[in-house]
Length: 421
Image 1 (cartoon, one colour):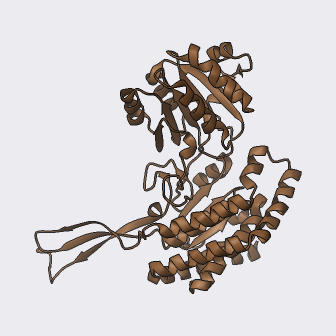
Image 2 (tube, one colour; image 1 turned 90 degrees about the vertical axis):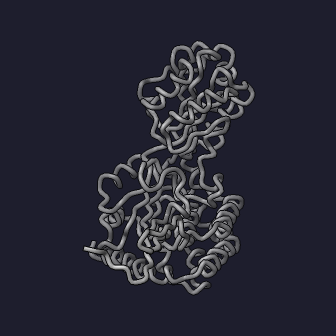
Image 3 (cartoon, rainbow, N blue to C red; image 1 turned 60 degrees about the vertical axis):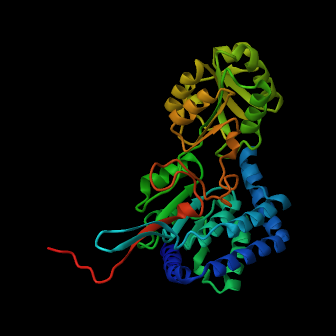
């Protein structure tokens, strides 16, 4: 434990030491480091895929689910997507130093609200090795040193990706302490990060399952940006186009079942259920989805199993969906308010007034009209990438990208003013 504590304290000191270098660095320098990292990712495909193969073999031996294996898996396409994601981040405006507001007081003081980094960020995540690239790149662009702690199942993949980010820092002349990876799978390292590493960590971002996020929220001694789970809903209204509804529902559930934007509950308006629900259920079942539903859903398709109360509260992260018939948009809003996690919800309807009511009254971080919940992603929002989707109601909500990794300070310029007694 003493050795681990020494290692972790060293990470904290190195990250804190990199803060001033990042604060002084130019946009061009940080972008150069990112460009070099993207090139290195492409050049290191063979090594990254070999490392991932090792992780995948161990994960299969441990009996991880298909959804979890999908989260873990890397291939040429996903490596290219990571590299392109970094290049998208390069193209974003630099938030640092931008003035979000400016005004002059009657006494002549000029006051500006200026964007600044949050500080040293600790990111604790599971399974998905691409988070290493996304998080490292976003933190670097926004001038924040970062300490990354990936899951044990992705440790070889994350290490190979991290090496590419470090190569980019080195090429641009930035300190390697700007992006660090915890070199151990010991869970005690997480506890040390949550305690703040001797006040060196300023913010914690968890990205993983309920048990991880609950632990972080319970034990963290520094501010946390995160979400508990993605219990996402699609509501098909009586005025929905049936073909559009089928397309959106199948995509929202089955495109990738293991991501937090995957739909977990389908709500169907009683005003259209007899004509629409059988086709929706058939499309899902034919796509390999297990169906659990209320009595009306069971009547519509014999493959629907009875839903228990727990199903309405479950983030499956698998090819399973719960289905309920509700009384119009009011019933959908009420169901989401009772069972939702505040992540992402979608309404399918051609009725603009109904859509606007849903968008206004559903209190989730992301609400969509006539679009799949799988668009709940920073890259799809034009933010380059994201560290995660925040369901918090302070500081950052929704995709956490470059801008959300900054705070602000007030810069006041005077000409000799003093405050009268």
